[in-house]
Length: 254
Image 1 (cartoon, rainbow, N blue to C red):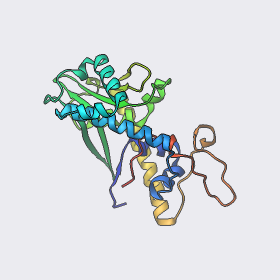
Image 2 (spheres, helix red, strand yellow):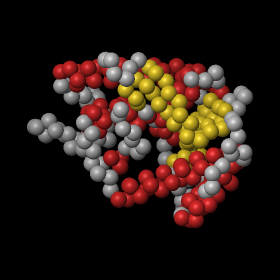
Image 3 (cartoon, one colour):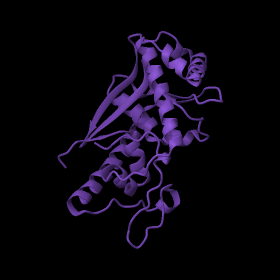
């Protein structure tokens, strides 16, 4: 393959979960419309991210807070719960919406950190989640957002893996802000690298067969047991597409 494909964590999550749905959503752009409730939640989340970004840049945020009382309550609660975020916004060692990229084979892996702190002996990634804290932290640890964000930072900086961490803050009312922190280490870094290369090698094969021979992306051997998008295929071979609400933070396949 000569093309360079830009991949984010959403692509890797869906590819690992359900290759046929990856094909439908990203290559064929067959999506079901989002419901109004989902769009409203996405808009609120975008406003919260913008609010934190403008605060880091030293830009006025009063107008945003006046427009949405819930935003103000969530911001106040977060800054109270997280002193590291509240203190010294805009300093040189921290940046909001920080973007990094890493090329692996034919793929440009791209991450965007909501906030990153780069200190002399450690680096901390922060991510804002505008929904209630998930019950299963193990699933979040295995999610490609956690894995890719830490992996790319280790590969594109001088920090050793065991000096890196990633903290998710869950800021949705009515609960107080809650956090989950994942500490990185060399063993996790090596395992993520192996899993990433395996997944991208699978994607190489799938894309080659799809583009050259019109072969659909295959199901996982155990998809009927573990894939949330699994539905019995009709005789026509068509796959019913569930709502995109089940796949948060999808980025377009470029």
